[in-house]
Length: 78
Image (cartoon, rainbow, N blue to C red; front, side, top):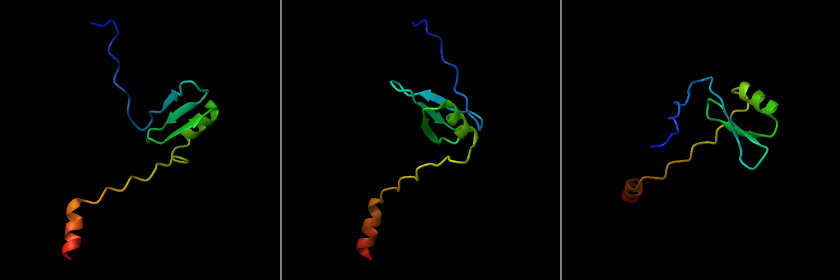
C-alpha cells in the first residue's frame, strides 16, 4: 500500500480554467472550459485570454471521417 492519498475528483463546468506549466520552459498552457488551449509567456495575457471567452477561442475543425467501405461498393454498382 502507498502512503499517497487518493486525488480529489477534477472540477468541471463553465467556470473551470486550467493552467499548466510547460516543463523545461517559461511558458504556461491555458485551457479554457470550452477546451480551447493556448500557450503564453506572460501570465497577465494568459488570464486576459481565459477571461475573454469566447473571443479568441478557436478549435481546430474536426477531422473528416474516413469513407465507409460499403460506400465504395455502392458507387461501383451505380
